Image (cartoon, rainbow, N blue to C red; front, side, top):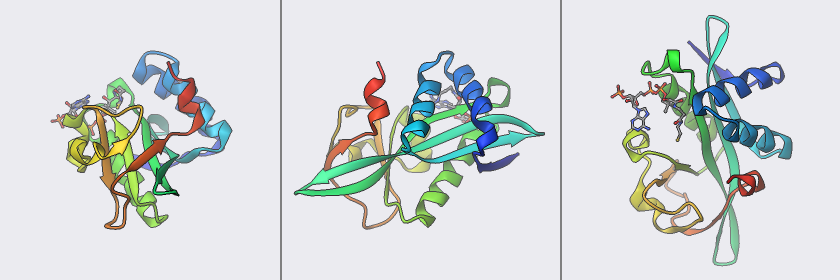
Length: 165
Ligand SMILES: CC(C)(COP(=O)(O)OP(=O)(O)OC[C@H]1O[C@@H](n2cnc3c(N)ncnc32)[C@H](O)[C@@H]1OP(=O)(O)O)[C@@H](O)C(=O)NCCC(=O)NCCS
């Protein structure tokens, strides 16, 4: 299993993996829109024997607080082909993504998902409750990558998210 950065030739295969994982077009369209808008900060793929079997996208978001605008990151979507699940592919994508983001100086990542899954990467629902966001609620979680991460604020996702239903 190889986790690597998405290359230009991967775009169609990424779309297929995401579409199959979510059984619909919405998340694959989101990835395409983020990429087109220049908001896809980091896109990683998992490759097994030359076949693309997993993908994670991280996009730019902004946190406004006390008249300041600070950059943050959204993890979405996370996709693994059904015949490659429960082997740690998603965990490897998420961990490698965090490592890339830390190295790039990013401080904070938000995710909307099941806390039973994302809790294993130390994402916190309680910490996310301090942020004002349209996705706020029991599935909204945050991970501070450094001690200097923002602790509160109003979150604006990339505009591609506005087009989600
Ligand atoms: C969620 C998903 C990415 C996990 O991929 P994966 O490679 O199988 O994940 P991992 O191997 O790292 O972890 C598997 C573990 O997570 C658990 N898990 C998977 N999805 C879960 C969920 N929604 N809630 C809680 N636990 C979950 C599995 O039961 C398994 O548990 P175990 O380690 O105790 O056996 C994959 O199932 C998928 O693509 N699902 C469809 C798309 C989706 O829902 N994406 C996430 C949206 S936030």
